[in-house]
Length: 349
Image (cartoon, rainbow, N blue to C red; front, side, top):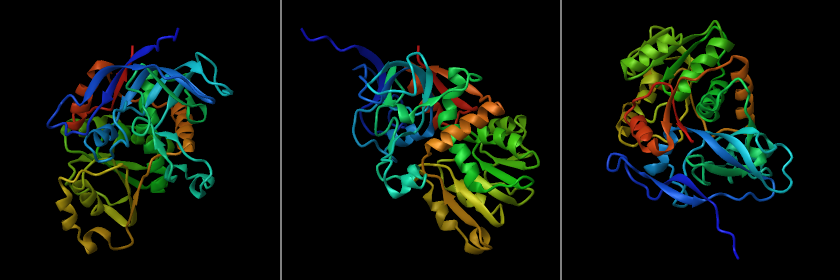
């Protein structure tokens, strides 16, 4: 007699849709618990961060290659089952999973340590089922031990907001004593500010955010100045990291860059609704004097490991808003509406 598959609860995306048309895009469903193959582990998920990239998936800016899919790529849990040949973990170990679900390991990019650019890059929660569920599976090579200093809920946003912020800061080539700008002040930017205050004690951080609540939060965390997205900073900035989903802050940020400055765009996609602002790009005002624009594409495993080590050393304690798994849609709508203070995390019970 065939043994019945064990079932789990998961929030799944069945169709691409605007959250303005449907405020409940994810559906609570029963799915079979994943079964590990060789070198794979199954996590019993305890927490999963909520990221703006989930909005990009749901609304079709970076659509999943197949539907339905379980979103979520900032995953924390314990090893519940293992396939053959697993050597890095044991049952009960606490581990995390990031946006990078897998890469080929053999292409030129992978061999150069740029697996984030691999043509066969697969993303957790988009290309493969992610952490908005009671269980998920992943190759042991793409899972990470979690430092004991973090609770499960604190650790979850470190796996994307933290790791991508860490990569953005490295790409900015910031030096101690220089001025850094942050446009948008959500999950990633508030962690970058914590890193800068620890690693570059003589740097000044200037924050641009639409809401006074976000600006006040930035000052609480040690920002030297906080103003509206359209404001001119009191000093020119050597580097700016843009964490918004829009084009308007990009154009405004460029006018605040010092000659030779670098703008890092930390967004997997930009919304089309304000693309008109690109038409206002003025070469002398925004780009001349060797200003640079560089995008951030995904993360590598080295980014995740490096950031976890640094975060534990500081230690970084992200500000977190918690939601039940069944409230995932509520968290996503609040994110869409820019109702943010730190990071949003689903607690899976």
